[in-house]
Image (cartoon, rainbow, N blue to C red; front, side, top):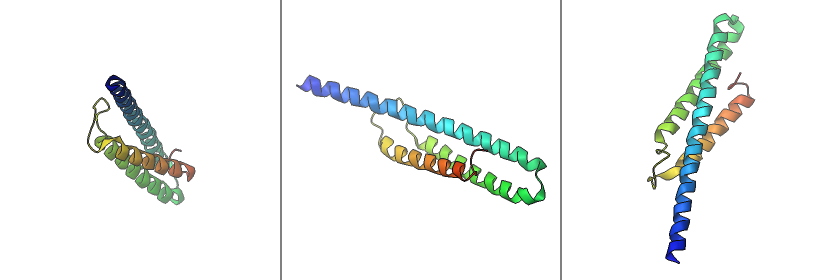
Length: 114
């Protein structure tokens, strides 16, 4: 019986590690997209008429804030290969969900991805 419980604990630990790795990769991909959007917006700013510049600068500020937030999440994320990290992936998962909510909302408002 003890061996069955131990096997289940090992399987659960592997699943947690896989989820953390997936979360980390998703955050990295999202940050890459937001950085590309920031670069594209900055390029548009160069040739934009004065009437559009304020909106583009506002978009740049918001994208920069989203990038900072995503970078903080990645810095907080435990090493995906670690086991039993205090603070665990529950907090990171909640923050990552919030990050993607912000990213999605901004994209819907055409603030995020061009």
